[in-house]
Image (cartoon, rainbow, N blue to C red; front, top):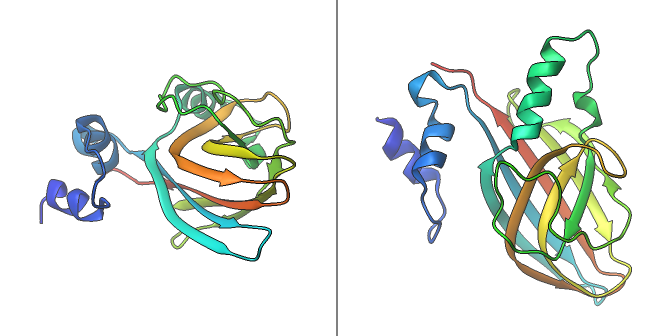
Length: 180
């Protein structure tokens, strides 16, 4: 079956399709794609759990790709540092040139648990953040440091209203596909 049909079948109904995403996520033109997804579950203080599922599918940032190339040329492995989850309130569309969140909520970043995803080519980091105040959370970022650091990926999604004490579980997955 051709790659376009397979790619379209994986898209969620109502998703805006972009040619750039198709090229990056299908490995056309000899590109070995790095694609990412973000899923969230919301735990409200009243006991209600909302599973929002996959809220964003996209590519990683330019700064992460530059570090990937630099790290492959060095004797120091630093990829295990990409475990710091942050969230914010700025809904400007994500872009591969992003270097940080639009407006971070100001809470400390949460360290995610790093594991292999469903297959050996998927990196997965899961973090549950407890909010200290009320926010309308619309963005998530994965960084390599507790403060500042390099942004691996930024996701923008529909607003999730949280109050003090509410939690969001962020599940970030990076799929690394060999060309073929």
